[in-house]
Each structure stands twice: as structure tokens, then as C-alpha cells.
Image (cartoon, rainbow, N blue to C red; front, side, top):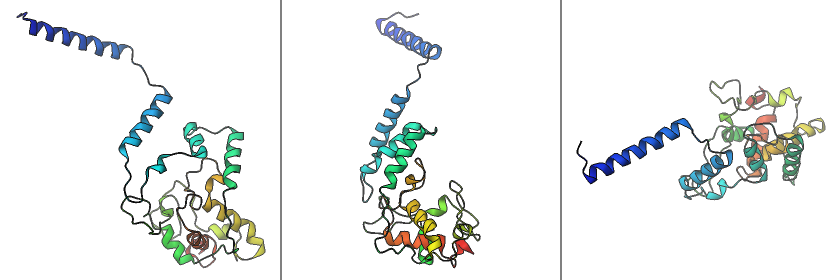
Length: 221
């Protein structure tokens, strides 16, 4: 073997690398949950950039989302869950004019529209609700998401024959609140907080309400 200084140095380097790899294979060190969370946060921050209507502030979690993120899919402590729901219920804004129901045909367009809030969307453009990604909306649909429950016959199953009737008030107000801020009713709901987060306007929510509750809507046919 040629033992020149250069070859000796290479031999020593190879030996050191082999020992390091052997050490890793024998005694691996698993990162803690906190280290994984921090690495994920840094990766998200470095991978995203502000462009158009897409801003970095959407990466910041409020207290409700942070608690659900920390739970990592496990059930929340009951008191914590109740406190999250109570805090979010306070954010629900009922329509000042008392008008909950809009146009179901416009609501159907919103429910089937998945655009909005991406870097390529123009400022001022109306967002879609992307409801079809998580729910069945009507009997005619052939393809729909299943993350959330089916919305087919939503109003009919709840006995709403006239959304303006006094006996429908509880269902109407609950449905509005659920669309406005779903975490008011389920602490770690995956449903977007359409009103609270400013995803949909008040008129858009009225139209989605009509889609769900109007007896003439395809949802209730």
C-alpha cells in the first residue's frame, strides 16, 4: 500500500466516516416532538413567500388552532375544548338586518367553487367555498369529498320547510354560526371559519344558507 501523506489522510477520513455511520446505525437519536415542530415551522417559513393576495400571516396560528395543532390528532382536554368553543362562539356575528337566507343558485356556485386566496387570485375577487371537497351537496353529484358529512337533505332532515318560520329559528341560527366559525361548535373542526376568517362575505354566507335550507334547493330535493 502506498502510504504517502495524502493517501494516509484519505484513509483516516474514510475510517472516521465509517465509524460515524456505524455509530448512527447502532444508536440512532430520535428528535423530540418540539424539535420536529420547530423544524417544520422553519421549513414552512423558508418555503413560502408573499405573492399577490397570499400573505405570510396565514402561517401564524391563533390560540385555537395552536391548541389543536399541539394535540396532534388526540382528543383535547374537555375543559380546554369547551373554552375554545366558547371563545369562538363569541366571534359569531349574526346578520344585523336579520336576513339569513339568500339565493340558493348563487350558493351552489359558491359551494362548487374551489378558487380563492392563492397567489394567482386578483385582489377583490370573490372566494369560493370549496364545499364539494369535503361534502356531498346534492343527490346528482357523482364525485365529492368525504372529510365532512353529506349535506344532502340538510334542511329536510332538520324539519325546515320554511327558513323564515319561527320553528326554524334554532336550526337557521346554528347553521349560520357553523358557517361563520365552525370551531364554536367543535373545537378542532377542520371546516374553514368562513365568516370569522373573512373567506366568504356576509352575502355569500346568506347564499350558502339558502343552498342548505331552501326547500327548492337541490340539497333538499
